[in-house]
Image 1 (cartoon, each protein chain N blue to C red):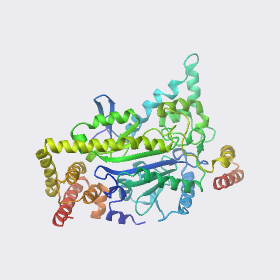
Image 2: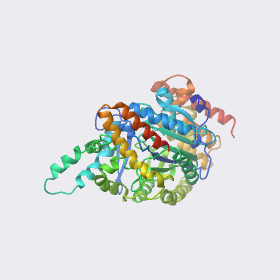
Image 3: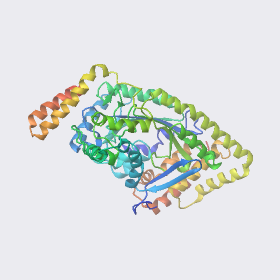
Image 4: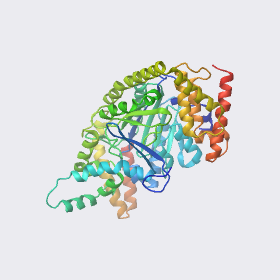
Length: 355
Length: 160
């Protein structure tokens, strides 16, 4: 697999389509699995990690999946390529930064990614654009079944799938939905939503998972509990609250529009104007401005560009993508200039040929 | 931005919801964030939840130094890192982990997907654990031929 080809598309989770895609960016499920006969990754020697990698790589290659997964060895990748995979959410920051033999198997559409020797021996992930948890579950359950025919997973009847961290034991499942909630944030209702979610044991995280800041008003909502509930139950719990949050966000958008249309219009126009003309732009500011433009498109307040284009800009203005596009490594200041120039060029093109 | 707990660059930004209208923002480096995320929960459960009374300190020292015979993990290692060393640890530290799991998940028994092959591989699982012990013993006494034989058997079971 040639990683440079990734810089021509925005990947599955930013495709900008699928159910409720004005608010739901993507749906994602991951399963944590370990081999029964090896110590967990954190206590495995490099020799054992190499054995685990070889074994999983061979089994994964034999999977009856179409299209086939391609395997990438992480130590063989440049740090820029590793960062690129992190930005596309195909690997975790932990896997990018870890030591020893490790890797990831991917489908070309980036819907499936299997991380090898992350915190657990195997981390399966399935991603879908829009609100499609059910579909993501069907797919990951199928891949897990196929793998299980060839691998003896560490499993106990009492504790379920055994994982390195007790917070994942049981189903080993983390199901998450990424939402764009600018209006709930602006109207300060978001904290109320978070508190309600916390009470039912759902976690809220930023764009890049655990510990990351919620930039661009993107939030990931996921289950915290993995033991004592079936996969279907866990999914039901998430699915019982997401439509409500979507409704709240839509209501907040409409009342914002009703109460202060001019103010909102001005905010969006200024964001668009800045993106079209600034000469230095940080990643953080880009996210916030693109978030406002994305909201503007969904409310039909701006017609110059489309959601897929905005989604592309979200990903291409990330540091590794930007450097890939420029074909050279850039320091912070140079990146800010390159980011601004890239945005100006893309928005000029989009404005000249509105879809 | 600098880490709030040391002078390294802050790479993780945590927004904690403490309760009604209370939100705490933390900007930490990788190491401090790890400590922040995993230490409090282990302190409040596990060890401290052990029965109190006579000889508590000795019990605690004994527990902390107890070691899994398969992977060599001591309980104190788990307390420091929040990570277990091998699947057998769930058996080895069963009684210590149970209250911790209860605390995290509110439940202590799995109720979900089961590997389809489990019924005939249950035997295999305990055999694998036995074999792993033997493998470690063989390696420790530098009996490499025996170790290789055991490893082949493990592979065979793994693949069956």
